[in-house]
Length: 189
Image (tube, rainbow, N blue to C red; front, side, top):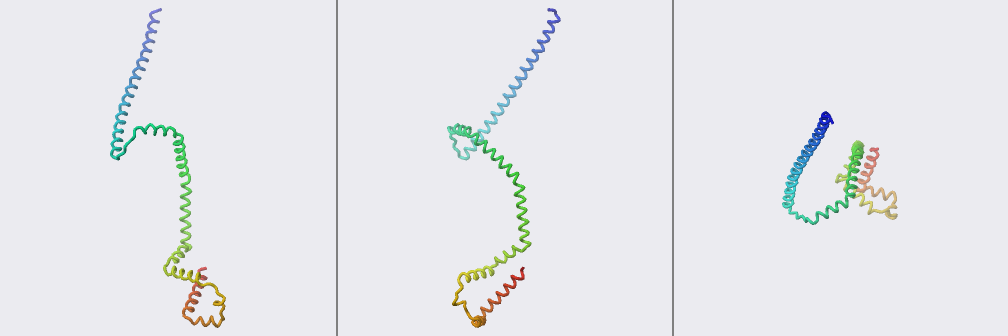
């Protein structure tokens, strides 16, 4: 072997050794970073645990440590159920996103229909029906209709008898009111 070949092999060995040393140095840095991360996480976990213990103590919660493994086992046994539940929640969220424009449009249509009813005067009719004097009159009318039945002996009167009853002020007043009511109804058309 010539001295030149030996120098080349030593150069190659030096390059390989440099690569190995760089790899070892990188692994050392990675291990130090990991150790730092574990150290930081242990501090955070310890603080979180202490904070949780203080909160549970203030809330007077007594934790049975023997139940925690059973809870974890139940959680793992029902992992498929939790997955299905999460999928249902996602589906419900998508459904709400899809249906919200429809619900919005239905609300607008309802508002427009109410406006149309207001313009046609339907609510005025309802307001008139809720007046105390109208309610009292409707009550008297419905009571009279329920109590007074058609009777052949009482309602089979002669024309002269009917004219004689028209001399009564109550009958004249009721007939006059009935005629005005019929006229008012016919004028609304």
